[in-house]
Image 1 (cartoon, rainbow, N blue to C red):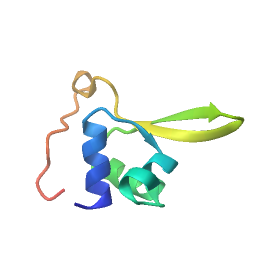
Image 2 (spheres, rainbow, N blue to C red; image 1 turned 180 degrees about the vertical axis):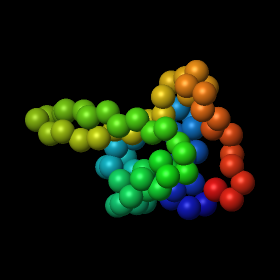
Image 3 (cartoon, rainbow, N blue to C red; image 1 turned 90 degrees about the vertical axis):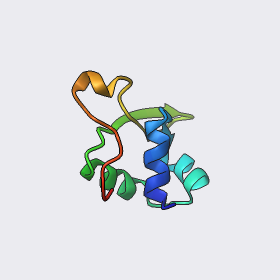
Image 4 (tube, rainbow, N blue to C red; image 1 turned 90 degrees about the horizontal axis):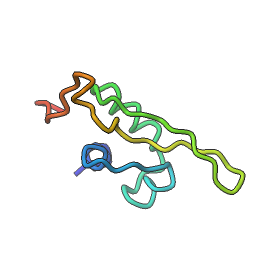
Length: 79
């Protein structure tokens, strides 16, 4: 399974992750590029800026209720 597919599946399960999480969990050092690709596929990924120990970083997730936004997250053919 590709890194992008693993990230897509995690997001659809309601999980969130940061760049460092993505490196550990999915083996990608290019999480922002994968997130961009997933957005181009139509996933409504939310970016939350988090601060911890004086450092700011992005945490990505899907909206809690995407169907309320009229979004269909079922698998798309060819994606």
